[in-house]
Length: 178
Image (cartoon, rainbow, N blue to C red; front, side):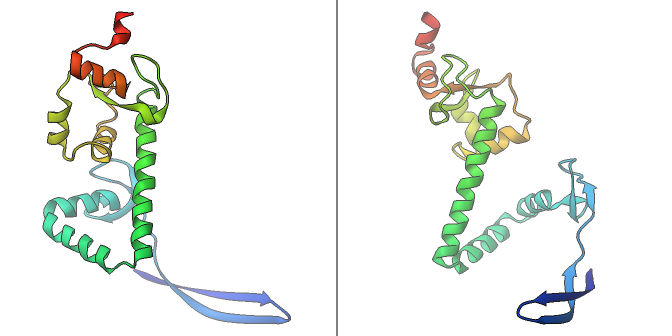
């Protein structure tokens, strides 16, 4: 629904000038409890927030949505593509920081706390198979899945890459032997 707002702008730059006009804009959507994520967010359609609505559109017609995305990306200038890439990188870094904080911010075995050395470990093994079931090879796809599952603590833990590799390769970590 379009709404018109009458405004009067008065500026003083080397004298006084006044300007009258009409502002045309969209009325902001009222917040609702989304039927999918149960959070209070602005309504988009079908009782869903914008984020859940987009996910539902993609589930209903993935090829159509991929086609739209491809065409949009192709239409961008090189600067626009760079901006999109940087936005994705920034979002992925924020998500990774959130995951690391949710799992304690340090290796559960040795206590290493440098973010560059930390990763998620499947406590009972089977990480490769699980990541394939979830979709994607890992990284942001897997982190998004963890976030949507509420950061399950009993199935996953934070380990440094050395401890994680040792457990996967040898079945134990040298820190356990000390």
